[in-house]
Image (cartoon, rainbow, N blue to C red; front, top):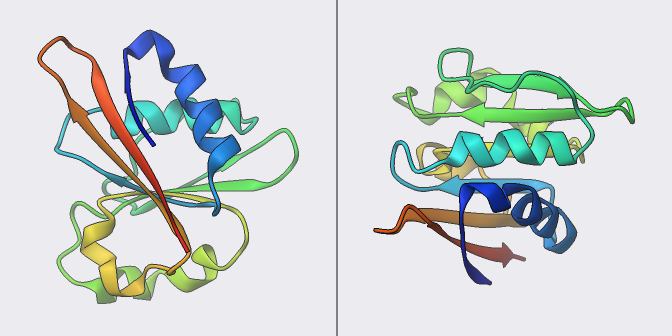
Length: 138
């Protein structure tokens, strides 16, 4: 699926992602500042959490809690230098927990990612709209 959207349509886009995802492992691709964290904030809200969402750039992972008492994991691998750093935090336990895992900069841990996941690529258009491409990986 490829779709253009503006920031005031984030709720609709987030609901569509949740509804149509074949996996709870969401991989966010896009340049710095394209809106990955902004979309993740909306996804966490739509998944039933009132927690304050911020990018886990230095901690690598933030955990949010939904009203359904289930965790939502948010990863940011921008600052890691080697996949071992992710491996050391027990990344496989998160990925195979059957909880939502929202992953920024997944290319930094490419060899550790589950095969079943959803690629979400965001780009900015000239008119301040974004283009999102969503692809289920089986």
